[in-house]
Image 1 (tube, helix red, strand yellow):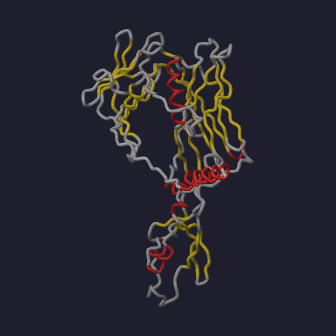
Image 2 (cartoon, one colour; image 1 turned 180 degrees about the vertical axis):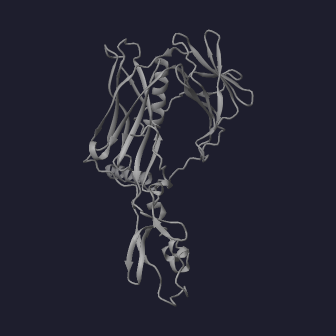
Image 3 (cartoon, one colour; image 1 turned 60 degrees about the horizontal axis):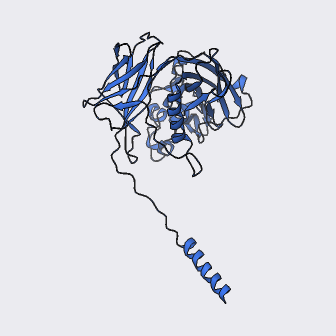
Length: 398
């Protein structure tokens, strides 16, 4: 009896625990989030770009809001200073200043409300060249950076990139409407071949501190999934390399863990990634960011799908694109029209007769229909590549 009673009590407990689960949705954080975020590098040989923004509450639709009308100054440990110019949208810049790599530099910020901030003087780090950018196509396309420092002085590295790619619309329209007639497209009117691009949003780091030689081989910089169109025609990536101090490397490592490696209780848990920028007006104020000083090296590669990845299968961007044909003119007296549509009505589908074909907007090529000549046409989003990109290739494209 005792064993039976114990089992019954156990069963009741299990049912109570498993059968009475109520979803808990914690309320959104309402605490004011208005921390200053500082991004950029004091580039001693090229233009310096600094981005200022403010954090927002998690419930906000915007991720960040730009910090406008601030005054930014680069200061050296020798007493020299250099002003940055506001570009708009929270961006500030200084032209190439040809600063000395033997000096140390910091950034001073004064916001429009009078608050001041300053970064620590940081050792200037000169980045060695990138030896090569390589790639390997398996399930994903992975892109790697390879570098070394013969003087064994760098040891800590960071990479980011900008990328661009050529893409095609789903249909190649050889005809164009001017609202009065349909004519053959000229090369200047083509809307099949376009270009677009993006910038990295991940943190790529590497260190050779455990090696006898300062050599980095196969540092993963970017991963491209097969279900995107980037490698569908031609792709280019410009990888930039930064040399870091140990303190800067620790900051970026912590930021990397906080932003990319969280997902379970077994992952690294969130930590404060503050950086080397401090409030002068209010020392207790939190400022996010790390300002380093040094040089940037870069390397660009092109990947042509047809010749370099002939067996790479990409998923087209256009998952659903239908084309349909319409004859030129409905039979006399057909409802709702009482007259054959004008060219403008037909070419632009601006007629009650074609309301059911409102998705057909751009002629592709002529066809012969059951009642006469007509046009195969499709929605503009499937024909006009300029809706997602530019017809003009980047200046470096080859």
